[in-house]
Amino acid sequence: VKRFHLVGIGGISMSGLAEILIRLGYDVSGSDICESQLTNRLAEMGGTIYRGHDKHHVADTDVLVYSAAIHNDNPEVVEARSKGILVLSRGDLLAAMVRQGTGIAVAGTHGKSTTTGMIGVMFLDCDLDPTLIVGAVVPTIGSNVRIGEGVHVIVEADEYNRSFLQLSPDIAVLTSIDADHLEYYGSQDAIDTAFLSFVHALPSHRPVIACNDDPGVCRLLPDVRRETITYGIESAADVRATEIILDGYT
Image (cartoon, rainbow, N blue to C red; front, top):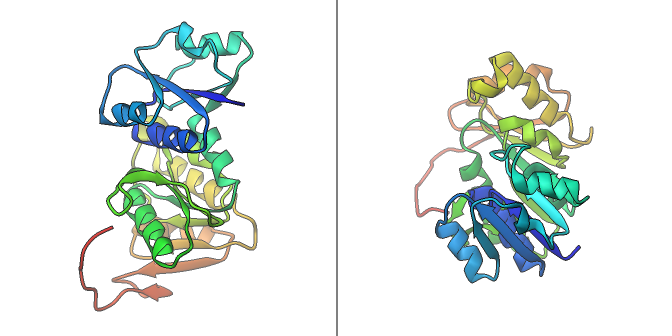
């Protein structure tokens, strides 16, 4: 495999995956309906960016990756499948990256990006040199991704479209569970079931790290069949932050 083509490359998550592929030495192209700072950055790194979608964009592609916003009738996806090109979802590619090391996946309705970034910066401060994939730019590293030489792969796990169920991490972090993406899930029960499926994808001897301050997470904990380590500020958690001083940011 030499060349990847990413459909919907302008999104924060897809652009991050594209950056990793470029840094790993792959030829990367991608398309989106409009240009942005993210696509301009990728072009400066050597990526080929197309504005709009056209079947001719995938002519020399080995692997096509599509975002959650892309439908099956997208001309590039249709052309890739007709030519026998390997077609992966964003979640498929992220899952493959997680499998390259000890995966730490951060899930939750709110707080995913902040928590993933904080964990990544803490690992950097401990000289663990992690690989980091976040859904927002982390000021400390000046990007939403980095490639490390350490064994840890720390990623933000998105519950939309149940894409986080494609991951098989070694450690899961739950920040919050709320009634979000109801246009997709339909009910809180369906959301809860998806999060339980996510944590039960962990190896049986691996822990779930859960925010004890969040009512939605606490509602699920009795049904979690894995070791659970709770954290919090206001609650009686296993690990509790006290005497907090705000000094800088990640």
